[in-house]
Length: 207
Image 1 (tube, one colour):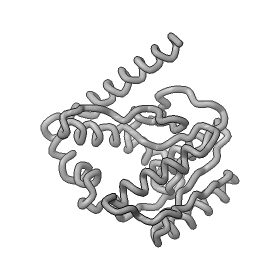
Image 2 (cartoon, rainbow, N blue to C red):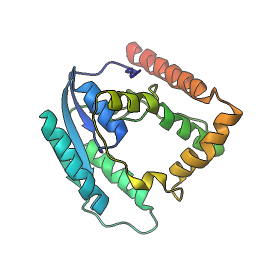
Image 3 (tube, one colour):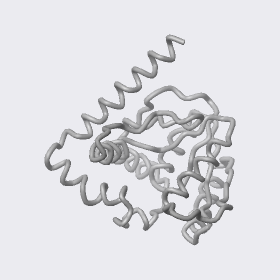
Image 4 (cartoon, rainbow, N blue to C red):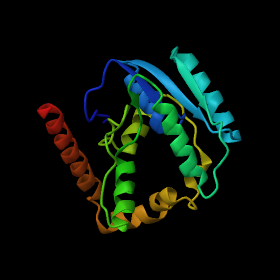
C-alpha cells in the first residue's frame, strides 16, 4: 500500500526517470495533485531512450514535462554516478515548487546498511531543501504493485544491475544476506524513518 509519510501541497513537481518507482509515484499523485514531471537527461544513449518514454508517458496523461540537460564535462577524480547525482539535484533544486522523489523503504534499508559499514547508521532524510521524499515508508513491492495494477508501463535501466556500483552491490549481493540474518530489517528501518519524521514534525511545530 502506498502511503505518504507527510502531507503534500496541491502543486508538486515529480523527479521522473521512467523507472517503476517514479512511474508509480507519478500515477499515484496525479489523481489528487497538480503534477509536473521533471526529467534530467544525462547526455547518454540510455537517457535518449528514457526521454522518449518520458515524453510518451507525459503526453498520454497530459502532464507538463520539464527536461534538464547535463552540460558540464566530468571533473577529474569524480565518479559518473556521483557527478550525475549532484547535477541532477542542482536541476531539481532550481524549481520553485516542491519536488517529490520516489525514494522508498528499500532505498532506506540499503542506505542504512551502507552507513552502518561506515560507522554512522542513518536513513535517508525526508527533505533536502525543496526536494521532498514522502514515500520512505512505502516498499518497492508496493510501488511495483501499483504500477502493475494500473497498467502504467515503465522502463528498466540496465545499469541498475551492474554491481560495480556500490549501491547495486549492496542491493543485489549484500541485502539478501542481511535479510537472511534479520528478516525484520525493513521493519526496523521503517521505525527509524518514522521516529526521525516525528522529531522533524516536533521541531517544525515548535518554531
